[in-house]
Image 1: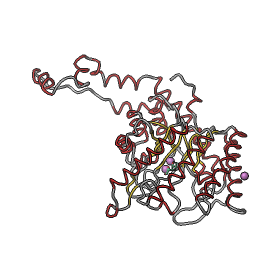
Image 2 (image 1 turned 180 degrees about the horizontal axis):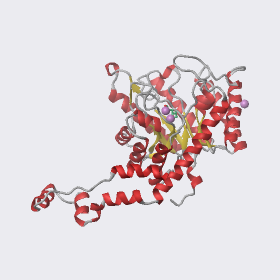
Image 3 (image 1 turned 90 degrees about the horizontal axis):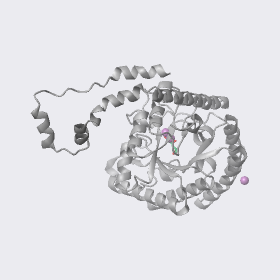
Image 4 (image 1 turned 90 degrees about the vertical axis):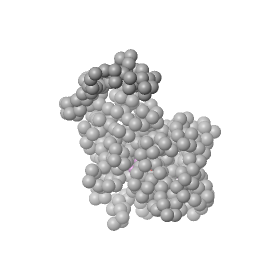
Length: 404
Ligand code: GLO
Ligand code: NI
Ligand code: NI
Ligand code: NI
């Protein structure tokens, strides 16, 4: 592919699961008790957290990190104070980046944790909430630009509904489309050259999420004239929650021209929610990365570990090992994927299956140059039925295991 292996190893650690989450779940409180969670005012804690985060990132030797505005700086008593907290902490991040060489893969804003967003952010019918969301996104894009971030991500958070009985679906979609247009417009005005990425996710936290999967997001982007401006950040566990495989979502995004970046993690086939486990399955990851390589690899995005340790993993070394194991697995999966490409047996199977495209009738028919009449004339003029091409599915699916 004309790239060195290292060029694909664009790993990132996410701030939220690694340095912010305290082990809280719907049934129990904090379990992690890290030193930067207590003992000082919120800004002092944020400063200590950033120090610990960059210590972790540089020990790990990871090239990138990702964060939400609220991961790195506490909310203030007013929006103005929140903004000044954030700006102050961005200066700290800039200094840490400079010192350690760790870079920002993408920035984002948290538009889902605060109670003001309980009914959505951009889709919220309250214009003050819409304006607050805009305020946060503006500041987060400014920070991403300042920190040399390569992309900007929007995960819908609570952009969805719980019941249609009090929801104007059409109005909410229009709001989301307008919001995103404002974001794209702003990005151009300030000269941010990174890509805006939407992160599709079904089912969680609202019952029906407007950005359900890649196909849904593409339809949305088309409708609001954004399909050339916005790409997607695809998460493995989100793909499986929407009933797709990770590789399906990747391949579809590539086919539609909106592939951007990946959130790497793994769901539990038995569980119906986003469990965010570290990727740990080689064949599964190899097949997903094979799709990435086939589509030309990463042009801008990378592999962000949107993954967390379990609540009882209170020892931070487990968090370290989670990332080491995941990076090792992805590197091995990339080697497997490269072998799948080099070996040519899979490519040959595709060529065989699409042989019809190379005949002159094939091209005329499949490119739509023959009418229904012309097509039926050809079929009816022959005195035999069509012989279908064999797909050799089973042989290929087993073949994949031999590259491992
Ligand atoms: C939640 C999402 C979330 C996003 C993050 C960045 O399920 O995966 O973690 O990745 O907000 O957009
Ligand atoms: Ni300071
Ligand atoms: Ni994610
Ligand atoms: Ni997720």
